[in-house]
Amino acid sequence: MHVLPVGLPALLPGMVALEAARLKLQLNASVSDQLRHALSQNEVTCFARLHFDARGTFKSLSTSLERSHPEEFEVTVRWYSFASLHYSLEEDVTQEWLRRAVARRLKWGRELAHLDDDALEALKTRCRPRIGSPNLSTSHLQEAFLGLLANAEMEERESAGSKHQRMQAIKQAEPLRELLCAERAHAESEDVAHSEIYGDDHYHTATNAPEETRAIYNYRAYHAELREGFPLFNIWGEPWPKRGRRKREAPDGEEVSKTQ
Image (cartoon, rainbow, N blue to C red; front, side, top):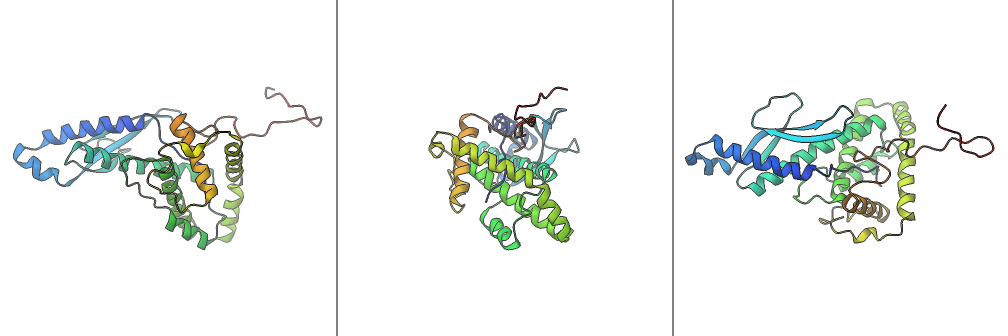
């Protein structure tokens, strides 16, 4: 069982590394030499912000020692070394990205509304929503996102509780499931060895996933890691403009002009 994809901006890893170095220097300068070693053994709460332009396109990442903007979120960093600070910052920033991705996806529809409670619980058990490794594979990201969506779906059911609302949610999500079928057909039509892309499941997070799901993850890894993007969707898993829409056809089968 899987849902539409999610990805990270190609520039985000480099920005995380840059901000980690900036935070390390600021933290080192904020305490005396006598206290630095003792304090560096502990976790420190800092703040980060994802910047987007007017169209919602990701622009940059910034960090600070103190909150200065309401859109900043807390990041808990371990600053014993640059590597530990870098990895802990990456985990929290990725977690915030996935949180935003879940919120955006739910506005399109509840993709897991058609699952019964037992299937949803099994999905939550399989998919750990916490990002916990320094090397994020595409499969790792998909599984974490799927786990977060499963949690969100359970919360929706507990808060709403109406069978009628769930039926409406299932109907609303039908276009998303159709797009998922389109992605599957696109993956099956490609004559490439998706499973040969290194890093597609480096930590074996999708080992327990159905074979069909693993095949889709390999397909996504191929495009995300080799071509830096999905062919049918943006990094939020939303269809590219004018993609996935049926062609408007006249009764005789000829395509209708899109300009009127």
